[in-house]
Length: 501
Image 1 (cartoon, rainbow, N blue to C red):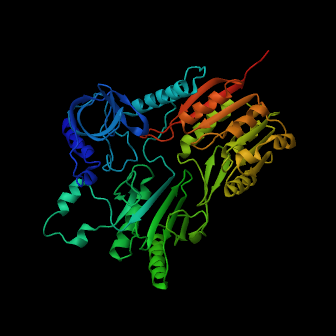
Image 2: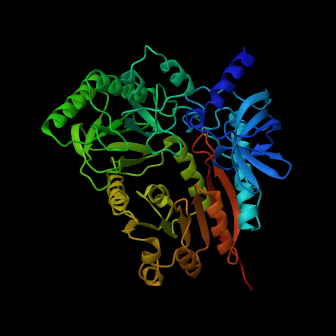
Image 3: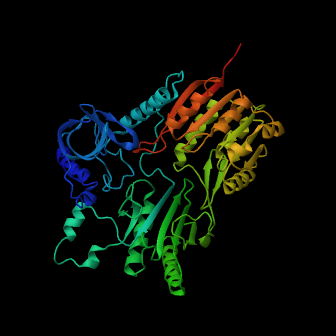
């Protein structure tokens, strides 16, 4: 039974890029009987043929495959598997029917224990090869208790002409199929690397199943009632985007974006909103945005409440956090609690210490550690996030936090430190690009006793640790898995100030 499923899977995997490949006139080289040896970046695996390193998606170490080379440079190549000669013993059967095409959960074919092992290795490799700093033992990656339906936020795109798999193209390539039947709309995820290609999703395993019911109902209603989906190239059409948030409190937020230019379009769109409202009374925050721009960003646009509240609330321990449609919040709520618990533990605070929380976002970490500190000062470049942080602090009755908005390298300077005090502990959680050199310099000048560095990118964290290494020693490294079945990993690193003669 397993062999049959794997054979079916191999055909599914081999079709990942087939619609594009079928249009190519160039013949690509086939290399036979290649053994996949290791994992690589971006969720791919790696093989080596002579001196050539080959990156391959949707295979696992131990697979023996025939590879079709798609792109070749001097020392490396990119390829896809066109035939499986032997399957690795370290392999799992993906549970999602969209695996191999969607690109969102590239490691479903890998047992979860192996995913965690590689994430730990990924962190160790980055910190040693890039950072080149003295390290303690990298702790085993802290796994997520939920490896399905774990996300609290997903965004789906509408498209007037959805991406077709090779099987679907073959099915539609019959004389009795009309041109209209071939041009089917879709509601789902963008194909990796293609802004105008949307894969229609039947069932996604990333978020509570209520999301699948909402999305499929919206799609069916729109198709049955002739609501035009957006053309992602010409930007013509009505329906653009749908965001769903589902939090552990059971509250649900749905926000639909539409391009509305006429009263008739507004009427069509409002009927859809009424359909959603009627069919899903469990939605506690039903919102919409009129977006006539050429992209789906709505940070600069008004959000309208169709029914319910303008926000939802997430909880951690005795804390409550307001989440609006524009708010950032860690997308794996339960694992975020474990991540923040590691941060709090590493910080080792006592009631007399001043904490700076850099890149504080909506102040979640700041408030999570506030009960163990004298004061926590959060800095964030997004003004709306700082407003959320202040609201959440008031909501939770926290009086020992201060929040400031502005570019980190401009706000965090010597005069700021003179005004607010020299921090005993700095917690920093920068974006993927890491910290600006000016921020690193100010941290070194502030000379806190401890630094807790939270990162979603081990490579840039490694670079920053090298910059801090003269004054700070890495004491603990804890990888945390926030996104099962993907290559992404969070890292919490504790640094202590070196004792100098």
